[in-house]
Amino acid sequence: MTTERLDQPRELRRTLRPHYDPEAFGRLSERIARFLGTARFLVYMTVFVAVWVIWNATVPPTLRFDPYPFIFLTLMLSLQASYAAPLILLAQNRQDDRDRIQYEQDREAAERNQAEIEYLTREIAGLRLAINEVATRDYLRAELGRLLEELQEPEARERRRQPR
Image (cartoon, rainbow, N blue to C red; front, side):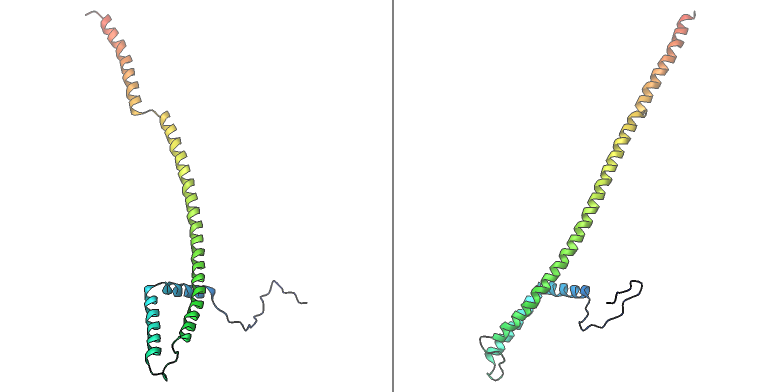
């Protein structure tokens, strides 16, 4: 029994399996699925089937490759559908993965925004409390006016006491 050493890289092994890039294959499947869902594809497919049927119904019997029940056409359409369905499902799964990641990012952003809003709310409440303790302009005017009256009262008393 041989044990693999973790301090050395693995030996390269040749495999008979073909290697493919799953991300590239996923992008290709999305492009195909996107095309299959367009009006252009429906028009192309309709023209293809119409040409197939017209050719095999109108040309001389020696040139027909798929006579009337059009079994070969049915086989071709089934083959196209058998490839289209998994490609569409793969594209949907990839979109679901992107949506899930976007949802998580949106949820995290919403949580950060909520925390910031709560922080700012506490800061505003603290500022309101601090402002109530600070002398306002109206308060200062009223106090200065009262002090001025107090200062003027002794002078007025002095004037009244002094003979003229």
